Image (cartoon, rainbow, N blue to C red; front, side, top):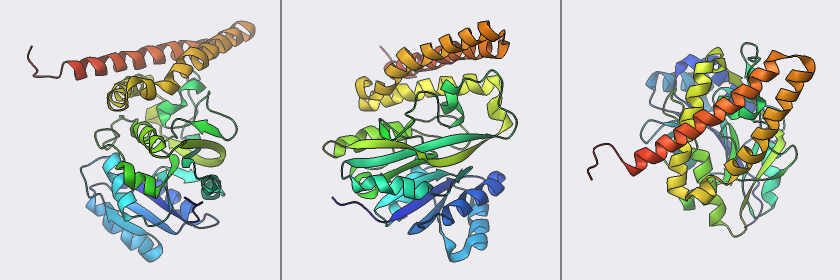
Length: 317
């Protein structure tokens, strides 16, 4: 296996409501140097968006419709099926790639053991970031979080808004599991986690690299800065982790989470409580409380997900 030199970039979209964001996302990809071999926009069951995108970009990119069931995982699989380059990179439809983003991904594929790459996802809060929001829970809004490496390093999985994989590996492992991932605006996730576990297992010594120099900026609407969204997203993440554990096994499915719970979260609580006491700052106290609450919501979702898998609705004993 040799280092790939070409990249297809896949952006998935499901609604016209994000049109300005989608334009910015695709324009940022088309401006990359070196440019991608192709840019593929996958539209998830929204015919008006298909027509509008084809009228707007013409031959500058390829617009295809999701060939599977509605949802982000099937849309990404459709993009992979349409891709022809060595590497397939994924960018969310409400994220903007910084200059050098694609080059930051591609340079790691000179190493044949690298099956995937992820980068830094910086939140672009449409309103100010809530004072109570802890950096350890950046994943709640689809962004990077405290605890990720601050230099290139191996990780279990990338963040979905900023990731890439070798196309041949995606083909061999069967792509994203369509039982996982978002459908429309729903908050399920973890499809990239489960895929990453299979992808690294496919190549001897396979690994995924996180490179914080490959940067995208991800829009965070006001609705995601509310406590109700935080609670719901943590719960949904827990349920998704239960699905991943069932598919990949709990050891692989929760490997990163164990270190996160044992080290990152306690440090975050201690740091914020110390700052709150030293500066008499209630915002830091609130962040410490949000870390504890977020872990509680996520754990409850995980336990509920395990319970429902063990006792599916309609089952008899």
